[in-house]
Length: 219
Ligand SMILES: [Zn+2]
Image 1 (spheres, rainbow, N blue to C red):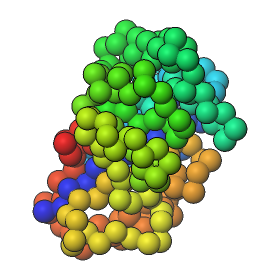
Image 2 (image 1 turned 90 degrees about the vertical axis):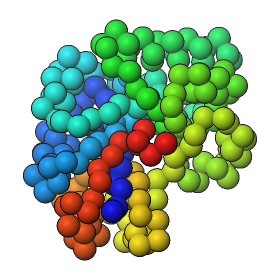
Image 3 (image 1 turned 180 degrees about the vertical axis):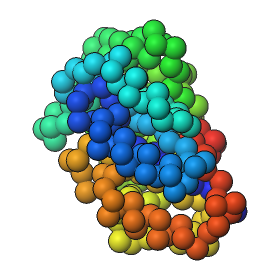
Image 4 (image 1 turned 60 degrees about the vertical axis):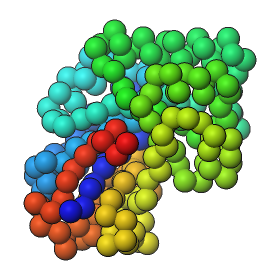
């Protein structure tokens, strides 16, 4: 039996980042091939520009088997800025509180956290350890932020970035932890070409040999 956890980063209300036409078409396409597929959406409150939450959730309501995970507050994307969760504790706490409230007010309770790639402070660490079942992390971040290894919350790293021609050895690990991005800005977005590489990788398995799960099920 092969476990498959499908994580999509940056799904958020900002137009162009998940929940919109192109990504939804890809998600429906995946569901048509794998009716039992589950998705973990790593979602910030917005991506640099606010979006329409009502429209966002309405669009996603047609997608079954979804789990949300935190992916930051405003997801500042400039490489020169490291301020998402590396401000003074006061500013960091403000962002974490605003982020938390944006979800709870909508009765959505994300289970995990993947920070958007930059430095984090102690306040952030406490938030994750107290509010999250797991911490999803890019494998590269272990070398950039080695102290993360000491965090008590369980950590999950992906073992395949969608579209990467170097494929994981599924006979060896028996679990495929996928990482990709909503929107069109990344190499590993949900293009038909990238999805084709995935379906090729999974084609040696029958549907009943694949157990689709959320990231939180991997703990
Ligand atoms: Zn991101």
